Image 1 (tube, rainbow over the protein chains, first blue to last red):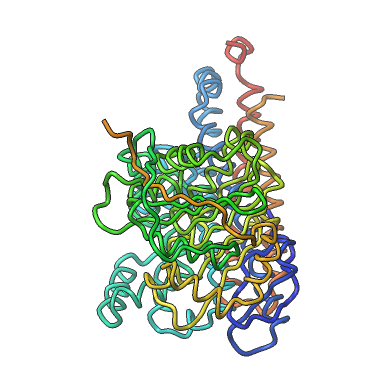
Image 2 (cartoon, rainbow over the protein chains, first blue to last red):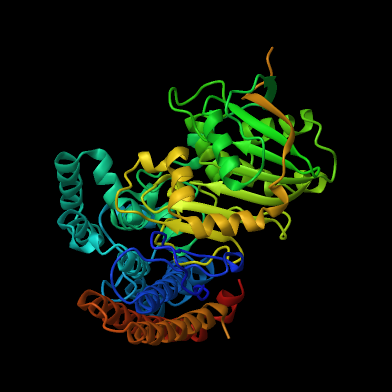
Length: 476
Length: 75
């Protein structure tokens, strides 16, 4: 898949456009010196080449799997029994094709591929995929030259893509010891997915190979790339039919619309399980969904760690079901126009609502604004729904679905994507709603105006509001 | 033609085509870093060799198909 053309430059000096849709009116952003047009062209070329390499890697993998399948084809075996000498020649040729280190390499799929990976046998397809990932890193480095000039990150990139496991671990430990975990993670964040995918493809752990392939080829992984833990295994504790109970509103909620008001409301709500519904003076509705709360990873609220994982990777969750119940309890009439606004896990949860055909048949979801959310593989049920995704490149959370700053696949050319950076941002601070709110207010002024223009029908006065506390399950 | 032989031939042709596509990718990046030039040249050469291997396997499989008694093929 070849990425589409990037839009034309705009004025903001802070943001770096990963993908921006037509609604953006065109946004290209750089924060370092140099000719922006040339840098944009260089980045676009590298991403396009990376996408082409990923497609080639995929085709080589398919050929490898067909070749190894031929070796165990029962029809070949029947012929072989009749002509042993000719069969020996055919099998020798096939075996050479499937295992030659300067050809396909170790061209087996399934269990043999896993066993081969454990003893370091590598296939050609994997190496082409890793080259694609390294090109993606090079593309990110156009906007983040510090990745290649920083001794830690540059050594890490060399170690990971050079398949040097011990060196990779040593460098990461040294970076954390020297800079602290927060700064080390912030330094690696823009290329975290590429680094993890390359490790997954080259390490001896056979269980994370699928995740590595998925990230490298632009598909949604069904496991995490570090150890290969399956998504279903991680999210199995996030269960429940979802429940919503009305509670008193906290002070400080905005009384009018606009993206800063909506995100301000999300910040006021906090992450203790509360959501806000508002009705505007023109009969439109706004749903506010905050992100994951810190504390116990599994608790009664759907805004917990396992809930965050579930909403990022799967389409349904207690959070989604509880949100739907809150919307029904608020009395939003059938066919009403609704805007969904979410931060972090909340953004993934509202996107899950927007991609639910039954929900969208009942309500007219006109807009979704997701901030710091992993939503790249979600698709709205109504293609007319306008989606804005705002992500900081040093924030790892939006990349948890496998698509980070280095993504080279244009998954949503019609979305308005603001993928920005700022040298002072550190993870996890840069993931907080307060920082995103401040950035939209003070740094991303053009982008904020563009979003507000799209949300012009949601700028009016609030005539009614209700806060709900969400739970995984109904009270017994 | 035997479907196994057809598939091996098609895959050999596809790998030859992929080897060329890798060269095109290499040429599409202006001022490529040395690691990229080396990696793509290596990948392209491996595709070409793998294509040769698969073509040889197709010929051997075809010979086996022609020499095997009809009863064994149809079984």
